[in-house]
Image 1 (spheres, rainbow, N blue to C red):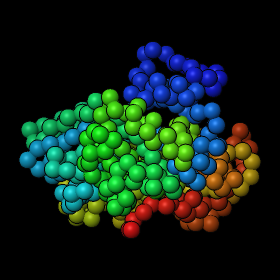
Image 2: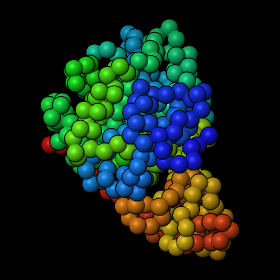
Image 3: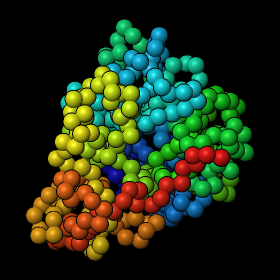
Image 4: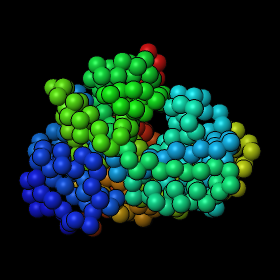
Length: 379
C-alpha cells in the first residue's frame, strides 16, 4: 500500500491516523503504513538530508503511534516489576528509565520507557505495533493490584538534535534544567504536557506528550523556528541504527533476551538479586556467561549494505549468524549493521563476512554506538 511518489498522498482508509496526519499531508510527506498507522517516511528533502539536519540542527518527529498509559495503584512500581526487568521502585520522582517487558522464558515482548513525572502513578510509553498486546498483558498480570489507563487522547512528539534544547527552552523554560532521562509534568504551549529529555536518535532532545487536540498547534509552533524541520520514519531509523539502538521486531523479539541483545543495564541490580520477575532463571544464567549468541555491531567494509536477513559468516565462509538491522550510515559514509553471532565472534576488531545477494563482503565488529551519542547527562 506504499504510495508511488513523494506527493501528498493518502493511504488506505483502514489505517489509523495520528492527530498530525493532515499536517504531514500538507507538508508533502510520503505516507506509508507503519504499525497500523499512516505515517510519514520522509518529506520533500528526503531521508539523507533529514538525517543530517537532525545531526546538525533539530528534527521534529511525530511518534504519536506509540502507546501512552498510566499505571496506578497502591504501589504501582512494585506491581509493574512483576513483568519488567528494571528497578522501578527505586525510580525517583522526575526520572525515567528504560526497561523491557518479559515473557516467561526471558524473551522480550517489548521495550519501553517508564517515568514518574508527577504523583499520578507511572507514565509508560511502548512501541506502537505492540501496544495492544503489551497493555493487555500488563493489565492481566497486575489485576487486583494496579490499573492500566491508556491515554488514547494524547499525541507524542520528539524534538531531537544539538539545537533541540535551545528551541524548546523558548517555549518550556523548565526543559533547560533537565538532563538525560529526566521527565516532568509541566504546563507548556498552554496545555498539560509531559516532557522527558530523551529520544531514540542518539542525539540530545526531548519527547513531548500533549493532548491530541493541541498536537497540530504545538507541531506548527516548533516548526516556525528555522532550526527545526519535520523528519520522517526513514531518518528516524537510520539515526537509531547509527546510535546502536535496537528496534523491536527486528533486533528484539520474544526469542531474544535483554542479555543477548546487550541490554544488561535494563536488568536492575536489585532485580538481579531478587530474581522475582518473569524469565529470571534464564537471565541469571546468561549474566553468568551461559550464552549461545550475542548482539554484534558490524562495519561493512565493502559492497552494498547488509540488510535484515543477510547471513553473517566467519572468515572461512561458515554461516554463524544473521543481520537484524542494517543500512547505509549517512553520518559515516559507509554501511553498518546489527546482528547476532556466537560470543566467540563478538570481540571488537573480529573480522567477519556478510552475505549480500549471494556474495560475501568483508565486515568487522565495532563498538556501540557507531556514532557517539550526545545525551546531556549533567549541566
